[in-house]
Length: 434
Image (cartoon, rainbow, N blue to C red; front, side):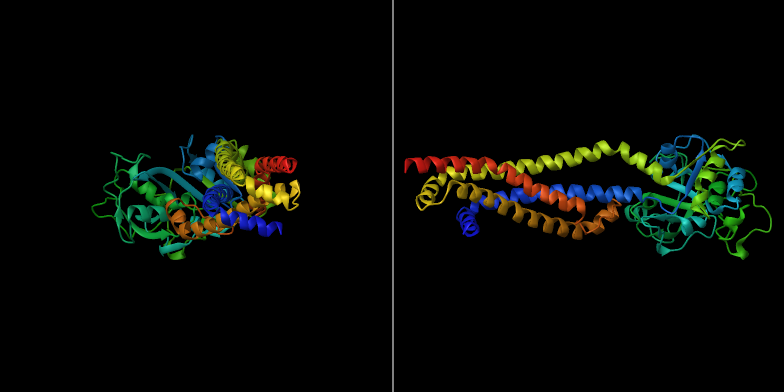
């Protein structure tokens, strides 16, 4: 009886009710959307790099080392010598080591010098390996592998030639114009800084900065030049035997920016970290990526909380709008209230009637808001991954989102007590008149 009457009442005022539902649906969409994107972004952020036990660089803070080695933001305080890298990489407890060399750019995008082991061991998310959408890893000195975003935004294809620039500016007057690179691979999207990075060999970094008789000239760039360097055993295993040098190459790097380590045993992580941090030959810093990422996210917590607060304010505004609609309707329904009292409806019945109407509006709005959010994510998923590097799941149902929906229903019922109490008091007056 009460439910049928509430539905009938809402149907009789369908114009104002539809507007209230639209406003509430938008607020539910915004609130759940912000919460879901916030949670997914935090998850993607924490999974920017996985499967890496330690990141090592010159002595600096853990956040600075994380920012320039993983996110390609900022600059290192200093480089580290190739000998220090070899010494750590040859430790029996080290399973693999990936050197990283930064300093050049292309149209504002960072260039990363590394080895083929980077494509074998770098992981993101839940230990997802890097995959090639097109092409393959670099085999020659002047080969370059592009991150997905760079290929999309700059329109590069396999076989295109590009020029690197010294420094990190979007516009540079120090171009390596005599040493063009050929695009040989394009990575699949990852939703990480890898998408915005150009990858070349360590030998390429040395070649473009070389001088003298051994310089590689762009007028006749030797694209067939083998990737040769004095590699530790852990890295030498990643190269075919026929591509290894018979003697030390002139392109062996003297220094690198940082390197990543994978260990044979997780139990040895803190031991290796302590040994590296206490290295007497060269001041080094070894950090745990997961710990550093947590510290960085805490710094960004203010922005996260601000977005969530704005979403809550939008919902409160919509709830007050529903309350105002019900309150204004009570004055128009005074005759209806009087008739209900005349036929014997108690005052509490009218109180529950208004509350039920508000709950129906909220529940319908929540259902529509959830459906709209899922549909929006479905159609925008590829766009978000391609242009914003955000991997957003379509599964919005989590403990947080369900708790949020229940909280919205409870908040709506609480706000609806204002018109419900007014209706209750008004019905009391009608009873007295009778």
